[in-house]
Image 1: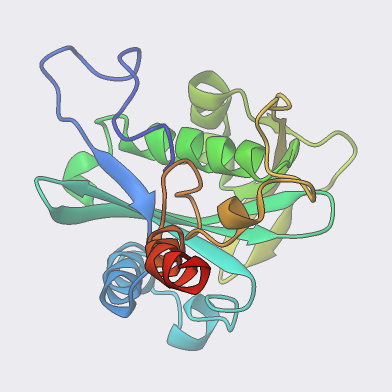
Image 2: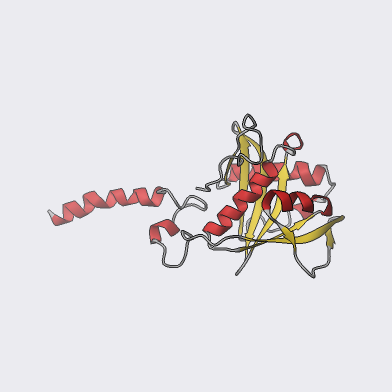
Length: 207
């Protein structure tokens, strides 16, 4: 499970909202993610459907979804490449945009990437919020890279070097860990529990 399941205390007052941020595993959770992005990008920024739903949502992508009291309120998409991962499509409902939730989604993204063994994250950020990303999460513009534009908006290419985790997943990790659902490597999954069926069989064969 992603360690970041609530907003770090530095981001919100002690009496502020507490979020739950998890990997979206089920189809209904992906539908919630698409709905949040439709509000942020297709409605507010008038992004065309085929530019927002761009063919990358199921091809090597992981989606994180944030909930408050069970209600979906924010999301982010992560895409995995050979030696870096890309943070994309951060979307937060308008009423929560000054709550620290966006920064919490980024922190959760970097933690998940580090757990998977990545140390380099890339993103595209609108110029007006580059400073916010820098202050909240230590993200910086990439040196020598020109701004780019797509879907009628200008973007700055930014990056973050994520500290290497000693417990990152690697090729020699326990095979059962590698079988667990994305983001839930630290707790037994359904295939771990399936081993319980083997014990009576082994006992019967040995009898």
